[in-house]
Structures are given as structure tokens and as C-alpha cells.
Image (cartoon, rainbow, N blue to C red; front, side, top):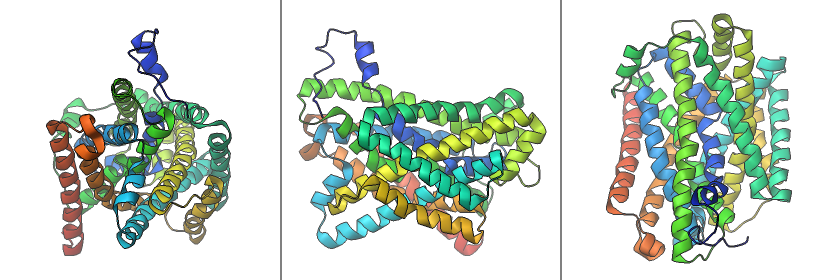
Length: 415
């Protein structure tokens, strides 16, 4: 990968130079608008209205901090987060750590294939298992672009799909009436029983994605190269802040739009706690054109995110086990669990929501090492996290951990 010179030294205007460095965060952002987000956000809005809007706002703020730190680690150290952990951990803990990281990646993959299969069912009436198989094959085509033509070509395709996702999930708001007063109340943190905590945890897991915490460090390292001079690193970090901010602003707007749509147009309608039911309600309430656009957005979400998830799993295995499995072979293997779930007839929307809960439990395992490494002068040198970012990282990890413990208590006690 060619090394980049400092953006301060280039004759082009700084804004244009920064624009050319954007991309890795937009690939990461796909994971924040995957079918798991659709299921969690629509379910939350349909059941509880605007109640859990604050969860999305908090989660997106945490995501910005997290993804910037992940990219920063990759740029400054020239290594991905899994690679650094693979070097630091003894053999047994390293393998156990890999197991939990792979479970998180598997949960992600299940959600993405299920979402794509549901989209094909909504658009063409295809059986879910067949739809899941088609999504898997299509994702192999996308991954082959990355393998043959490099990361930049892959980024362009993913950003294009992100544009389709934005149109698919935001357009419905143009035809639905949002209650500003109720929406404002949704900013106040609160719950309504164990089920709302389960959904909040699912929404958090769907927004702050552990597999993409691992991946973003590899994306930034691979895109920008290694062994930069301090001036070049400062330029790359400046561009990365714009990259992360823009990408996650778009992803956050999409997530909030989904919840607002469900809260304003789908609340109180039977069956809207499933994607199929929500789609039917969207068609009945807002018209068939909006319904088709919604389904196309869901399909783009499934196709893009399943490719990114497979890429993340490869980075995790390569960094922790030093084992490189071809992306296409990995795609074939990881497709199996999702197809099994579709074949046995398990409720796909419920599987999507539960997969996001699994992701939420995996967040501390990715977030704690990330904050620790980004705050280590030994690893980061002069680019070590400043005190405010260090504190924000640890507070974020603590909040997520407390929410997970609260979920366990409420579920076990039946509260």
C-alpha cells in the first residue's frame, strides 16, 4: 500500500485533500444501519413510541468516539486492534478471546442474511431460505471486488449502497406525522419494564457494533498504509475525524428515522413488531411506493452489511490466530447458521433482535481493550488519547456494561 504524505504538504486545498482520504468510516457505518438495526428500531418504535429515542442518541455519540479511536489506533500503530491483542495475550486467553469475538461476528452475519432474505420476500415473494442463499451469493460478488480491485473500489460500492439505505429508510418520514412534543420526551432516559430494557440493549448492540470496532482499525491501516511521519499522522487523524463524523451522522439519522417512522405511523397497529408486519403497515398507511422503497433499503442494508461482517471476521481471525482464510471461503462457512435458522422456521425478526443482544454483550470485550490501547503512551506515543477522551471511553464502556447487567437482572427476576 503506498504511503501518503502529510496533507499539510500537498498543493491541493486542504478540503479536497481531506475529501480524498474519506472512506473507511463509511464502510464501518454500514454495520450501524444493518437489518438488526431495522428490527430493533422498528420494534422499539412500534411498541413504545418515542420512549427509547434517547438510546439511539446516546449510542450514536458513543459510536463516534469509539470508531474514531479504532481508526486512530490503526493509523498510529500500523496494526489492527486484533493484531495488537494477538501480540499481547497469552495463548489460552487469546484463543478464548477469539471465540467470543467470532460469536459476535456470527451473530452479526445471521442478522444481515436474515434481513436480506426478508427484503427479497417482501419484494418478490421468494421463500426465506432461497432469499438467504441469494444474499450470500451476492455478498460473495461484493467481496470479490475487494479481493481483486482493492479497498477503494469496495468502498465506492458500499457508499453507493449506503445512499440507497438512506433513501429507503428516511423517505417514509416525508409522509408520516411526527409529534414533536412526544419526540422531545423521548430524549429523557427511562424504561418501561424488562422488555424495554431488552430492546434498549438490542438497539445499543445494533448501533455500537463490536465487530466493526475491530474492523475499523484494519480498514484505516490498510487504506492509509503504515510508518508515517508525525506530520502525516496529524493530517490523517484530521481527515479521520471528518470521515467518522460524516459517516456516523448519516448512520445516526437513518436509525433515528426508523424509530420515528415506527413511533409516528406504526404504533398500535397489530403485527408491527416484525419487519414483515411493519412493511405491511407502511404500505397500508403510507402507500405501496414507500413500501417498495423501504424494502429496497432493507435489501441494500443486508447485502452491504453481510459483506462488511465477513471482512470483519477475517480481520479478527487473522489478528488473533494469525490464520488467513480466503474471504469467499469464510463467506460460505458463515452463511450456514443463517440458512439453518431460515430452514427451521424460527421467527426471523425475533432472531434479528436477539442477535443484536448478543452483539451488545460483546461490546465491552472490544471497547475496553480499545480504550486501554488508545490511552497507552507505549503504543500511541505523542498521539495518546487526551484525558477527556480517555474518560469518555471508560465512561462509555461502564454504561454499556451496566445496561447489560441490568438486562440480566430484569430477565432473571421476571421484572
